[in-house]
Amino acid sequence: MAEKFKVPRGTFDVLPQQSAERERVLAAAREIFGRAGYRNIQTPSFEDTALFERGVGKSTDIVRKEMFTFEDKGGRSLTLRPEGTAPICRSYVEHGMHKLPQPVKLSYAGPFFRHERPQAGRYRQFHQIGAEAIGSDSPLADVEVISLLSDLVEELGVPGVELRLGSLGSLEARTAYLDELKSHLRSRSDDLSEDVRDRIEINPLRAFDSDDEGTQGVMKDAPHLLDHLSTEDSEHFAEVRELLGAASVEYVIDPTLVRGLDYYTRTIFSFVCSHLGAQSEIGGGGRYDGLISQLGGPDTPAVGWAAGIERILLALDEEVEIPGIDLFIAVAGPDQRAKAVALAAELRHHGLAVEMDLAGRSMKGQLKQAHRTAATHTLTLDEAGAAHLKGVEGEARDVEPAELPELLLRN
Ligand code: HAM
Picture 1: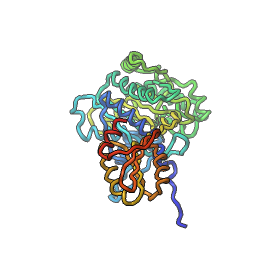
Picture 2: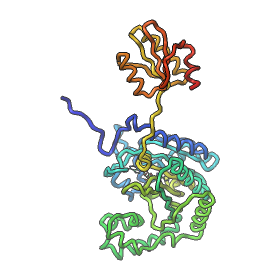
Picture 3: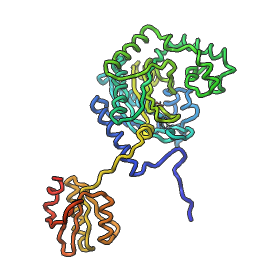
Picture 4: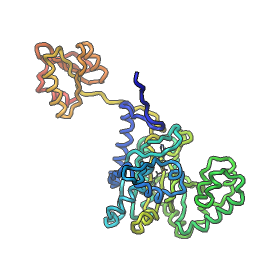
């Protein structure tokens, strides 16, 4: 026998019975984005590798270890997108969106790729939904995007979610603090994990995120960026907090919050679910005021987030019932097939969900199949060509096919 194939490591099939709950998440997100004017944008699944190196940052885990990078036949280095913000900023610059009324409010949903060690809630192909407000430095923009994710979590009924909030300050103001943090790390370098030690100079903030015990001990008395913000950055952060209060979004301040991408400035946030294990972040994001200019565009402030659909589904842990169809058409024999096909097509044009047997089943088998599809009505076409309609309960009655649309639509 020929060898069978399996999905590649860290990936999965979404089977029909799993589609309904996924669709519910996407539909809720679409609705929330639409209500707030975040219009859908779609970018390619792969981009120039340099876009991510420059956008996400060479010192990040994503760029150092997790990218699916390949050379195409023209010798170009391409990478399956590990995240959506750098591609969207590339698109903003490429299409001159700075000429549009600002901010440009965008939303997206689709697959992303990271070569991580797979575990529950962490995959090599996963799906994100996200929102970006590009071209406003107002704290109102921070609060608007945060509210979108907060609304999504609430409308879906995701249990045990906490919003953690922090600020990284602006790039210029951060330098003095980073020097202080680096000397703290250097003074205790023997206690740090190798990974953190190697990155003291290029990415010292990531030490806050380490799960290494020694590093965690060192970080207990590390200086916090929140205590070193410039006056403007502190005021911005204070306004974000005040407006979140006005929008009735609950949060906790987390002075040790950091994120895995280099582009963040000022506000950062993370929605964490206590019902999930190690991979407990459902979604997160923040401001990235320097990214667009770094990608060759004009100086443009921006803020946004992305959430992992699989993590939301894990946290919800529910099955959405697949609705039954409106009608199953059963035929007494081959002579009625043409009539059944025509009738199914006509009723589907009326917007009804209609199925018929495609496998040559006996009448008994067809009625069983009708039951499996949870059809609210079954129509049998007998040998004389007469039609009998039966609801889930009640007696069958003779009908004229012409009356069916009205009869069924009324139900
Ligand atoms: P991120 O924190 O890297 O941010 O990813 C956002 C979310 O994607 C995470 O909170 C998690 O739910 C999900 N996620 C990430 N990696 C995986 C994985 N391997 N398997 C399953 N789910 C995963 C970003 O991607 C930024 N682009 C967010 C952003 C938008 N910041 C500003 N705008």
